Image 1 (tube, rainbow, N blue to C red):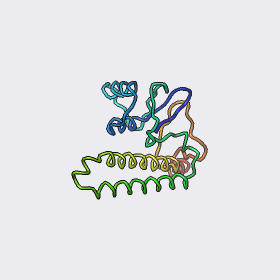
Image 2: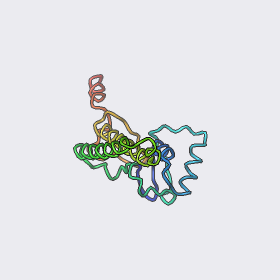
Image 3: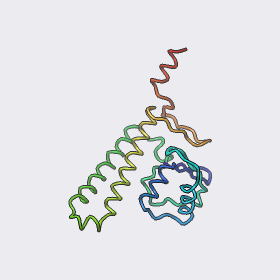
Image 4: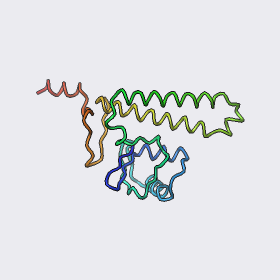
Length: 165
């Protein structure tokens, strides 16, 4: 997930790892920053947001990294519909890839990478649904607020805490 604010961009560590694995073409500056990041002694949690200057990062055309601002106000139904649409796209590409001969599969590894990126995006939407429903926590970067409609704490946990008092 990425969050853009005031000429900065926060990108989750897991997105940067996927970016590296996917062999997606990125700017030299981002490639350099990722190299520094993954070769440092800092151990990032996959959910951690890493801050970059927006001018150093160009993620145009990389739609499988979900932009928090684009989806934060979506309803559960809208998120579910988007997720189902992505599942359909993924299945069409996977069927096409699976119907190829082994020789043609090697020539069309791009299709395999597309299915993996779609799976990654689908999982991102599922995470957003879980966060929105309060079954998963996400620590947003400092200064970024949860929008209305997001449950910040699991409902059951709230109930238990209320009963304890």
